Image 1 (tube, rainbow, N blue to C red):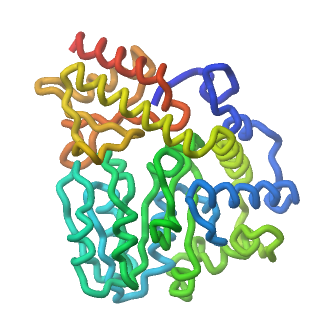
Image 2 (image 1 turned 120 degrees about the vertical axis):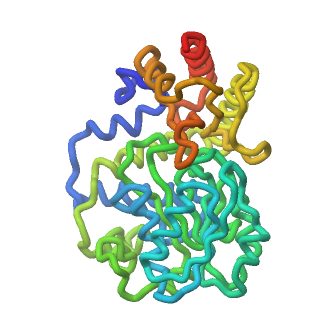
Length: 364
């Protein structure tokens, strides 16, 4: 992430002012007809970025982690077999959440930095209720083949984490057989954290838990909150006070993405990631994620031997206003995670990151 004083305001170096400008607009009430119009349009645009026609597509009033919990608490019945593909931190979290819902969890473990082995996941149990996988594993920078899982899922529901993929790389929920999906706003959508773009199809909704363990995340109740889950003109009932400014901000961010063109946005992220990864390798650095499965929007790179990871990250932030992440789990001190997402997926940002990192490494 590149830190800029004017990041939250319009300007020539902020190509996504719509999302941040919306936060400064006068607040609308959550029952104001203008807000209801914005909510309807936001749900429509979310269908586009998800690649779905699902009526129940909406921004949940919480971050992506709550989206994960909503996905499981609404679809996992006690004793259900849930197969989870684990190739990073967020696959691990899926196993924890599923277990808390009373599932019999079958975790299919993979080496971190590698994509999901589709055949191993599909053969892990003969008749699971749910198969769950992360599309773009944030902890490792790896993309997995969700379409192949959907093609072989049989009668199971396919539950997908798209937090880091939505709005950054190809995502086609309906075509790939995704039944339940959740995401976040703070990555490629370029909107502040606080909402969880969520989608569930009729097949999964019909199998839902009648009374989930969470009242707040009960999709049966939330449907009325957004008017038949976002269907324009649907009957609305009061459930909770919506975060109106955040929904307006998401509306602005999605408008900008669709004005640019979704496939053009995917291509821009790909170009930025390819250029960054080539530049890192030219500097003599080794990439962590397996070749052929690397995410363009989130690059993982091995910390050179003898280099203090935390010191480099601190100097990058202090000297250049650039924040890169540490690795996760066992790789916390040996891997860096560099995100070029949303407004930062552009050529000048790539050059800035490469030059700044070279400068700090030269001083290490």
